[in-house]
Image 1 (cartoon, one colour):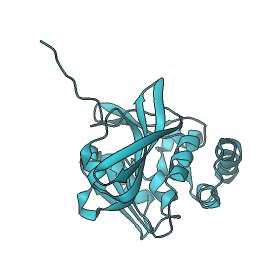
Image 2 (image 1 turned 180 degrees about the horizontal axis):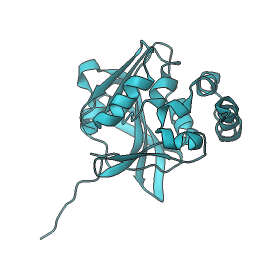
Image 3 (image 1 turned 90 degrees about the vertical axis):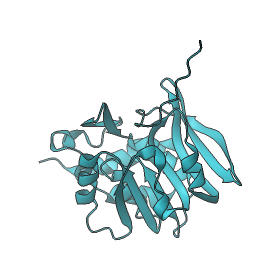
Image 4 (image 1 turned 90 degrees about the horizontal axis):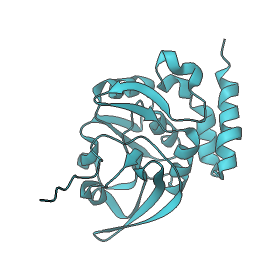
Length: 219
């Protein structure tokens, strides 16, 4: 029988801590949340590997959970207060929501694939401060805005104005931007109607549906 508790400890000690994740709240949450609960049965043995984890076909693309190191560093960059309201865009099966729910006051987990959203609903049962909602990812979730922080759980080529408008003044947004291998983790802050950003570390992730760069044709 697989000892998932030991695998969880090895994940935190071998992948997350060495990546300069020092926020004890994140480390504790990742030790507590059973990541294997958020992956398909056939992939449970792979749940703690240092890699993006495929969740099967969702629409035209294969959706993935971010590797633990990248996810933990993005969460740390958001500097979440215990009172924070957080939107997760592309929450998939809800693993990141379960981690953040142990740090922040409210979590809205947005997913557009209904099968993944149903998995998230089941896996997150019992967490009263998490709301799983469905809808197009690039539109965010205006009904619960504004947010103190937004985590985009996947890669984007362009950030839509809808997400900027759903951040509070001074709110932070973390994502992976660009296409592999020329992609980076980015941290954005809203100031007025502007969204200023800076690179925080090298990272890759699978492109989320709805976030591809618009094609422009020259005649």
